[in-house]
Image (cartoon, rainbow, N blue to C red; front, side):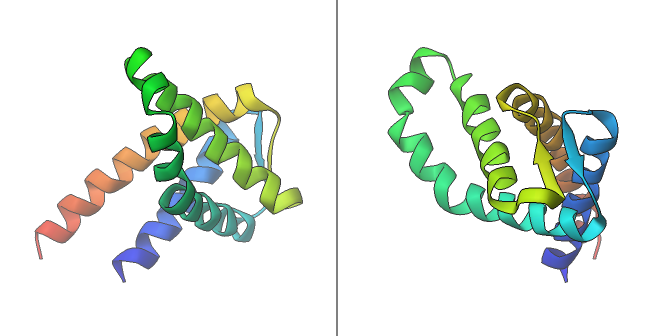
Amino acid sequence: MRILLKWALHAVALLCVAYLYSGVQVHSFGAALGAAFVIGLLNAVLRPILVILTLPVTIVTIGLFLFVINALMFWAASGLLGDGFQVAGFGAALIGSLIYSALGLLIESALAHLFAQQ
């Protein structure tokens, strides 16, 4: 139940990103669900590998390179999904991923508070 709620809330977060920033376009809630799933899958599978491979660069940049990795995951999801979820370019992916990450933190905090009371 918690995973489905988290998935739906992340899809709503993607719709909010598209509403707040014109460089990201989401055409429907179904496309947002698919994009949230693909972004989550990329973050679970590919992101840890990229973080390990780019560890020296991440250390030199004091962790700022992680923003680039997040933007690449966001942009890659757009490339994989096609028409339903579009990102204008790398700059748009960077801004979109920052907004999406901030909303994701709010979602995680709210869910932790909600499920801790039960």
